[in-house]
Figure 1 (cartoon, rainbow, N blue to C red):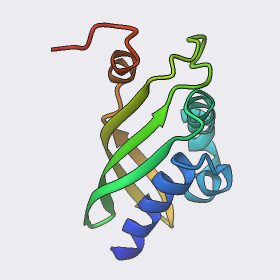
Figure 2: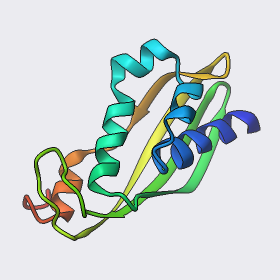
Figure 3: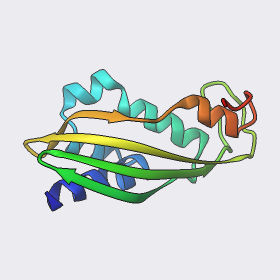
Figure 4: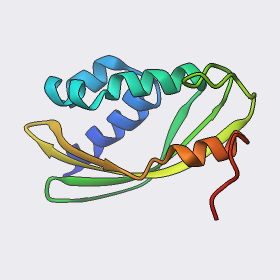
Length: 128
């Protein structure tokens, strides 16, 4: 179980947090990586937030699943899918659950919501 927690940590800190495509490719089957467009989504987020960091706040594991609460932080200094830089910081805590099979993520769920990012950038009114 500890190994699975370490793998989830690598996915989030190195793959997501540092935009390390080699880690993404190591930890997710190629077909799933392509179908989900994770590589492209993470690259786009890093274009918008080049200083992005991912800090692990908490991890729980049971069986072949790992739940991680992670906080993403960065400053919007690059284009975000057509939205010019605002110079504003974001801080977003999400929960991500990985199901593991044969050393790779076989399923992934997360609570990431782009509306929360847009609200912090002042583009939309924050939800109640």
